[in-house]
Length: 225
View 1 (spheres, one colour):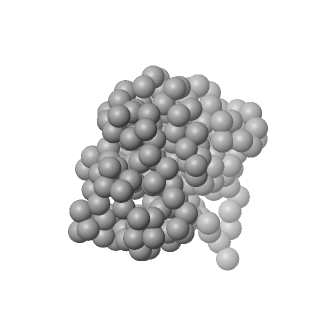
View 2 (view 1 turned 60 degrees about the horizontal axis):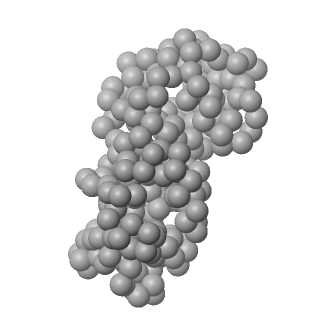
């Protein structure tokens, strides 16, 4: 295991960008859609999220005030395609209540908070963890908080890079401490990591032809069965 320096992390970005090009994330048209999507995408894929979003739009539940006044059982039915729909309905209601009670119904007032305060506020909402909070900070508020997910952990571990520990913050610091704090850069980097993990660095990796093979501990030793 090695501890990467800033040049190593930047080289990882450059290799992925050269291989895949710009990713144009987040796949949402507004802060509302980004936030709802970030909550719905927990433990599912974006195809299922799109079905749930389409149902919300068709039912005209397309604002946090509309979510707040919709019965939780009805909301759960609308978002059923995303899975864990009862839990996610509660999360959406909790988020909508925060906007109504603490920010006078103004989503922008929440998103305009300083980044650390915004993140802490989001983590205080029932069911919102580190990854979802950072999705919202980065993609809805457009503030530079690096998102860590299962895909990013997989790539870091297979490269043989050593974070300071195994916690979310440890992996986040590995990137955030070695890059300029720039929201578009963090946006693109996270999207590129997810694309690479989804297409090449899969649970069973496709190391032949991988753009990282020559710098990857796993890639140098992996033998396909």
